[in-house]
Image 1 (cartoon, rainbow, N blue to C red):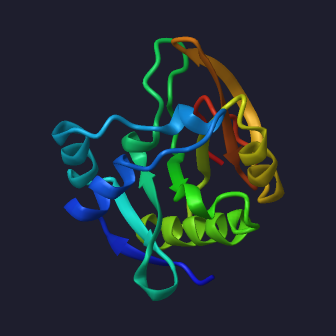
Image 2 (cartoon, rainbow, N blue to C red):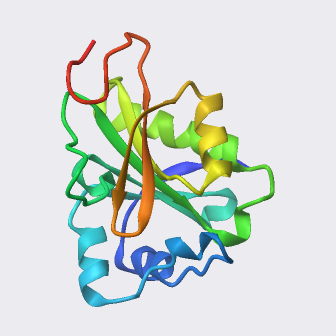
Length: 165
């Protein structure tokens, strides 16, 4: 499957907010609301479309990709990225090409910069995928009852807390 970047629009935002994942990934289910749609339309989000223009997922960049919490301070010159794939496409071997496309889109939109992402610690499937692309665990923190791992892809070896390569 080929993936392409597209503008986020109201229809795509509403569809994404309606996606339902099976346990344990139901953590990623969202409550559809006008406020949630507006957040996705306010900037920082883009749609990812697959063959035939079907919505395949999304990516978010910058502050939109950060997990709100009271313990881990996101800092430094990192490009924070977040992503989600349509539930019906998960578990079909599309994770690597989808993530490669997300990284390519991030570079196209923001230039090549050191990248950071945050994964729920229970999501070993995603963490293994990110590791295959050179991401490593840099910090762990909790947001409410959920543990998260901040991961960085950094050829220069800077730490995730701040100093850029």
